[in-house]
Amino acid sequence: MGAGLASLAVALTSPGCRSDEAEEPAALTAAAEKGLIDRVEQLLDAGVDPEERGRFGLRPVDAARAARFPEVAGLLEARGADGRRRPPEEVASEMISSVLPSDAPGFAILVARDGEVLLSRGFGLADRGRSTAVSPATRFPIGSISKPMTATAILMLQQDGKLRISDPLSTHLPDYPRADELTLHQLLTHTSGLHNFTDKSDFRTRIVEPGDRQTVIDSFRADPHVFEPGRQYRYSNSAYLLLAEVIERVSGLPYPAFLAERIFEPLGMEATFAHVVGGETVDLARGYAWTGHSVEEALDWNLARVEGAGSVLSTSEDLARFVDAYFRGGLLSAESRAMALSPPTLSSGQRSNYGCGWVLSHRHGSRVAEHSGGLDGFWTIVQHWEEPRLTVVVLHNAAPPVIHPSFLAERLASLFLVDDREPRAAMRRDRDASPDTFDALVGHYRIDDARVQVVSRQGTRLYSQVTDQDRFEIVPRAPDHFFFEVVDAQLHFLRDEAGRVTAVRHFQGGGELTAPRIAEPD
Image (cartoon, rainbow, N blue to C red; front, side, top):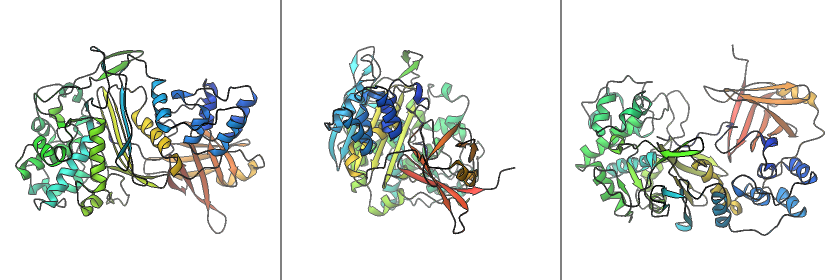
């Protein structure tokens, strides 16, 4: 099940992003959305139509505006593009419709601001056999988006005085191995070291078999820890099955009943339920798998086996209700919410990016809380941008997806937040940059424990390569400032008072990280 979005780290081959722009038929839109003004001008001079539609049906001027490159948009308008500003919901709907065949598995998408729904639509089919269209009322298995709900239930029980998240697991599950070494907080934040049962080689065979949460807990209870509790972050569905067990023992209610009584019913989430045997299946999307250019029905999970980690079924509009109530204070106290949105510092000294049920980041000047979900036949995501208050929901009933929901959610946020973000300067090559200045930048930079960035010079060009990724040229735009042409990402090399290069700062997707310079690894 999905672990949320990957962290910023020069993910140059991210979902929905190609690196072969020169061969792409819609190269003008691709260049416009990256702010590559030299490339845009070159293509226009070569006779490319400024109204040429790019990937996902985007016009170049719409792509430039969504990415906040007004200079590029202005150039396109000056060369004949229609400068009319279209409503973001029109652009978003057109973007999905342009790539989704009428008989394909579909999407339910929703965008809301300050609780007001701005866009709520279905695209494609929920059930191809019955030709049932996806609508805002279509229920989807939401996979790991269930985790924020499980975490909310634990924090509610803390507010009720029935547990503390600092409790050792042994307080509530005394019969579980090494339970005295684990805390509920470590289970919530994926820092427990528990082996993830969905990584087992026989998982896809077992997930369709009869059984329930306890069956699965019994299957992993003897597994060794993958690290000492609190040492690292590693996503573990096993932890959330144990949390569902804690909820039942502490509250005296079955997990589905607790969520219904404390979350779904008070919020009017009438279409949402945690899976129960014989549960309601009206308006339920069927999952599909793409095999080449054809579609077949996907593996049908027994969701009782992932209770707590991924067993909830919901709609786009119900999920928006949950997110709105969560961040407006309708579910948890301010203290509990702050606790949930504060990722732990690990005993290794690193800071995690996962709080209590939410993947957390800062992008484009806003704190973002999100969670994705993935199971056979389904990909889902919810995002909440704190400033301004924007919620994006994307539910899809195919895997691999036609458009990755995480990628689509970012695009939707860009369209609806364009007037709330500062404009960006176009990416223009510095023609006066001397390649001789590149030598001071050549070296190794530490991204994290697993990845190193190698900056190298070849002739008059400078290149960057991150562990397990391809090598790409980085283009000078100002002294010590460079950009990639394959993706919207920039680098700024940092110097100390003596002028020595000490680090490189990465900017991508509205976030940033700094990689210190290191000696060449052995």
